[in-house]
Amino acid sequence: MARKGTALLAATFLLIEAVGVVFVHLVLGRSVQSQSMSLAGIDTDVMATTTYVLGGTLGLFLTAAAALLVLAAARDRAPAGAARLVLIGCAITQTVLGALVVGPVGWGVFAFLMAAFSLLVLALTVYRVRPDGPPDQGRPADPGAAPDAGSDPQVGDGHPELAEQ
Image 1 (cartoon, rainbow, N blue to C red):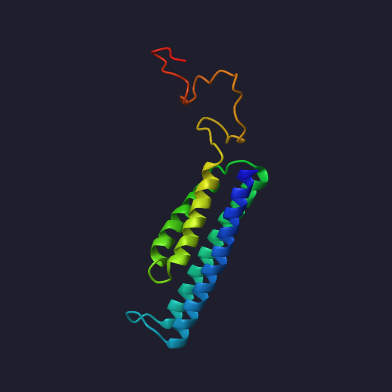
Image 2: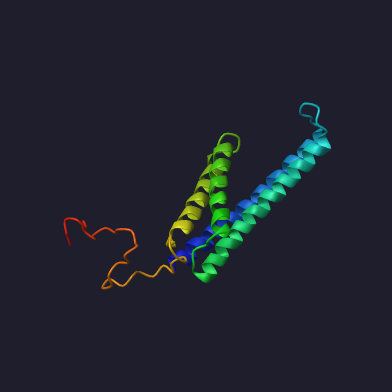
């Protein structure tokens, strides 16, 4: 149950962040348009449109990542393949945004982004993914069963050459 809750909480944080990002970009675009600002001779309409497109794209990206987390929680399985790559990219985006906003926006937004990053990483790591097969369902292995021949050594397996147990 903790896996599902973690994924859903991370998805909630990402949705809140998506709304915030879109709102900030709307405000930035409007301020560029209304003040007729220019940067190195670039038309203000181009800058405003670019700001709107960037905000919408980033908002869609965060919403897609949140949807992937909700899907992982509904299936109770680890995201695999492209979904996992999107979530890893989202985690990287969280850290970059956090580094960029700490100065101009403040520590509160930085703390929110780092909380979202932490929940995202936790949601990615709470499900075990086996390198030789499908994602694990998260159930513990049978303690009486012998370990797989191809599996990685685990704590308590002992040293194979010394025959420790």
